[in-house]
Length: 243
Image (tube, rainbow, N blue to C red; front, side):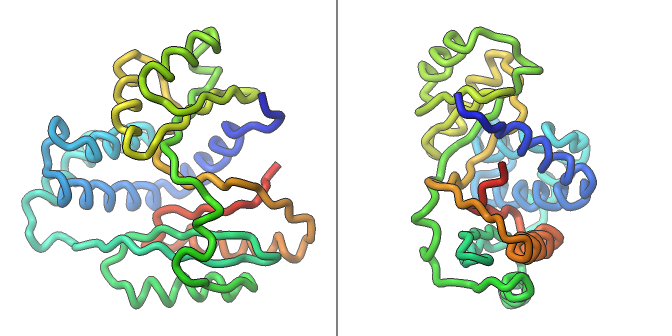
């Protein structure tokens, strides 16, 4: 059991998202478009769409908003064609940053992302320059507040479902999966009635870097705030040790 709390970080991020609900709905709305375009509008035959719908519900997106998004993506051949573009670079003191975007204008997005790095005294790098420091994993967080179960029993249950790893934190359980197995494991956990605080495919740093210099921290936060405020930016990952 590690001494820090991933769930506290998750809740902190969620509270920030709640303050910017329009932003999180925009992110999920674009993911619905991509999922429908790639796999069709029927969740029964589209596991990625099922995952996005589960995420939408976890973020309290109304059902009619979800359904409207699916219908729009399915019925409108001129619906925005978003392109996935990932940027990699360095923040102050060499902090690794990965920025995942969904954009309908890659020139605008590239300029905005570059500007965010520059204003925070960082720099954009070449593709692959920092992603080797991260592992792509399915990550499912179960809060101990919501699920008072025996840890060993839960561990055996999720490993039998196909999870790769089970980590007990102070106030939550973290379940890791192969990205390709994420949908199957998430759905089994859902069917078992186990409440999930968070479930997504994410980039997990292999090592975390502590940043103690106040100016460097301020600059990094400036970059992260600019990126989070950009509608084209879906997710931002860093190897900053936030504990």
